[in-house]
Image (tube, rainbow, N blue to C red; front, side, top):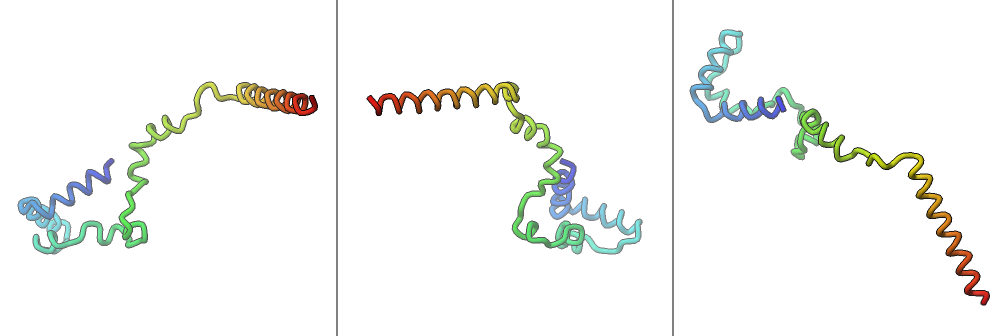
Length: 112
């Protein structure tokens, strides 16, 4: 969530001239020299994010979404409470008994 907020802020920098000037002044205090025009023309994250195939294909940043979606994904992927070893064994036994009954009934009706 924080990365998305930072990205939204950095996108605002390109449109807000007062913000650009304030950032140029702050950068100058820290020893970085550039103009407001250079700041507006700079590509956000040009040095911070490498040009990987995921970036070029514009895949979403799943690491940033992981913390916000973690609870939702866990809830959707959760195993139902009725699924346990006993219920699976009972269901398997029911299927096997049903298959055996059908097999015996089929042979009985074919031989008659």
